[in-house]
Each structure stands twice: as C-alpha cells, then as structure tokens.
Amino acid sequence: MNNENKFLIKKAVKEDASTILFFIKQLAEYENMSVDVTATAEKLEDTLFGKNSNAECVIGYYENKPVGFALFFQNYSTFLAKPGIYLEDLFVLPEMRGKGFGKLLLKHLAQLAVQRNCGRLEWSVLDWNTPAIDFYKSLEAKPMEEWTVFRLTGTSLTNLANN
Image (tube, rainbow, N blue to C red; front, top):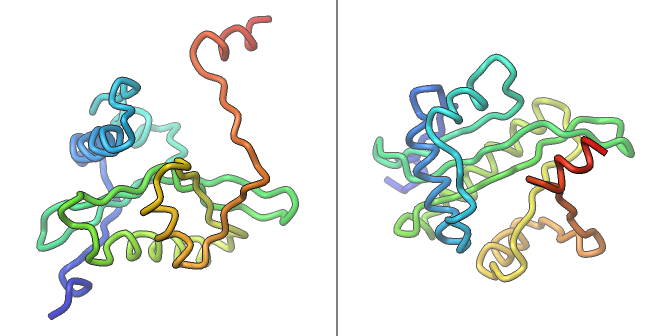
C-alpha cells in the first residue's frame, strides 16, 4: 500500500484550531519568523471559523495523524473576471516530507479551484526557499518574478487608515 492510500485530507473545523496553530508555529520556525506569530487558538477559532471568516483550511492526515495543512482564501482576478484561490500557508512536517503529501494538498486545492470555476491558484514563497521553489516549478507553477509584494501592517496600516 502506498502513502497516498494512507493520506486523507479533511476540511478543518473549529476543534482543529490548536492543530492549525501548531502548524503555523512550525512554519514560522522554518521561515525564521517565530517572533512574528501572534496567533492563538482562540483567535483562529474566531477568525477562521467565526461568522465573518473568509478563509478555509484543510489538514492532511497520515495514518490518522495530522502531518500538514493548507490555509487559503478566495481572491479575485479582474483581468480574468473570475475568482481565484490564494494559498496563504502550506506546511508539511519535516519528517513527513518527500512522501508526496505537499503535492496532494496542492492537488486538493487545484481540484477546489476547478470545481469553483476559479481562474487561478496562487501563492507566495520566500526567495531563499529553494526546495519549495524547485517543488513548485516541478508542478509547472510559474514564478511571477516581475511582481513585488507590498504590505502594510501595524503602525503603517493604522497611519494610512487614519490620515
């Protein structure tokens, strides 16, 4: 029996908030960004599973143990006049990598995108993360090298909102 037959993807529910937080913290550690994590299980319960949530999460289980997750939300392409799916985070535990679980999580999102008549599935990757970049390219994903991501957070966000 191959790994694919022992791997199951389930839509996350409120009771999974602690598991999701664990994966977020593991991802942040991998990306050397642990100090930036202010998420808590309670915040995830409210913002991811509350009334006004606009994000979704799936968890990958191998032999009934959570080994990875994908957190995503709908965006929109004005050029295509279609919705899209933006993958915010994808993470598989280091000891579970190389078994095809990341690809299965991405395949699941691609299937959702097709079912929902989306024009694209997209995400960002840190420029130093060569293993991830190589993996994405192996799936025929194309880097958007001519684009630069901009972000407002914290005081900068508040200043713009209030001035």
